Image 1 (cartoon, rainbow, N blue to C red):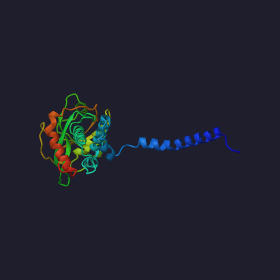
Image 2: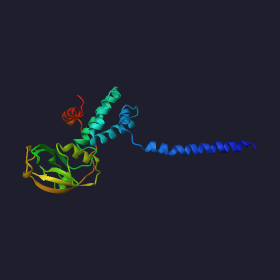
Image 3: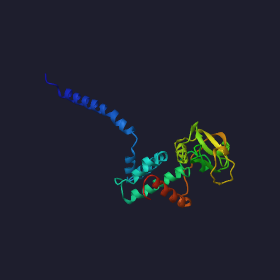
Length: 243
């Protein structure tokens, strides 16, 4: 018995539905998969402004945690080379500078952070994040932080040996407004802005709870241009790229 045209049509429709259903999970999985660094770098050259802005901000967020995993890809031979891409790359560097150095787009602490050089237990030089200046009425004020305080641990985990400031800034970049960080401190009695090498026995231990505030979204580039250029040159050199 030959199938009727209606039966054939129903069979074709059923097969199409089944095939579409089998591709839906894969399509959903593809949509949920976060873009890789290479894809984001390519999007910096997109003709669509929203795509460029989204890629720039996401790259800056990832680079705040691991600059060496992101920045060299922007200078690869395979990266786009047109003038629009170069402008976007410069804007990315500024967005990263603002996030890491100025606190823009990350939860606010009310602190200007610097480095305290000290001699560790093995007699080697190291550096911890140091409170250089505190904004009145800020989360740092409420937490009881003081100028000269050095952060040695966050939430019970010691900061890494050597220069601990980049790692500490990455922790702040990944945190959320309203989150409370338990900070272990080495407390020094220093005048504002003073820099000197100290030994661990000169510091008292302290602990504070720092509740992070809303992020600062904008900063004025013009006022920080010299600082930005110096920072960028050093960061590129650290990532193995000749400035």
